[in-house]
Image 1: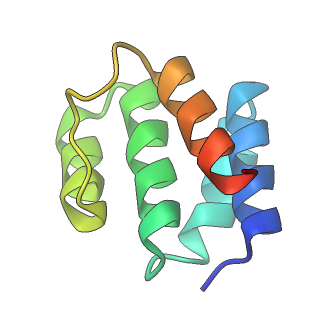
Image 2: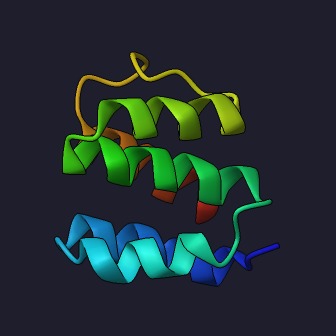
Amino acid sequence: MASREELTQAVEAAIAGDWDGAHAIVQRAEADPTACWIHAVLHRIEGDVANSRYWYRRCGQSYEAYPDAQSELAAIKAALTY
């Protein structure tokens, strides 16, 4: 399991445009549902829809739930830092 701090760092990296940095963090925590959700959003940003949908299925979230990746990342960050 990844810590909240690590997952928050991944979200902040993604928001800042550091796709590789965010991806490196979530890849280390593939059993964590929130890490899988972040991973899904990262592949959505990348434009890899099939891979993104795979990660959405793993975390129990919906590809269509948010209008864009930035609003989804903001929601994930809010959930991690409540």
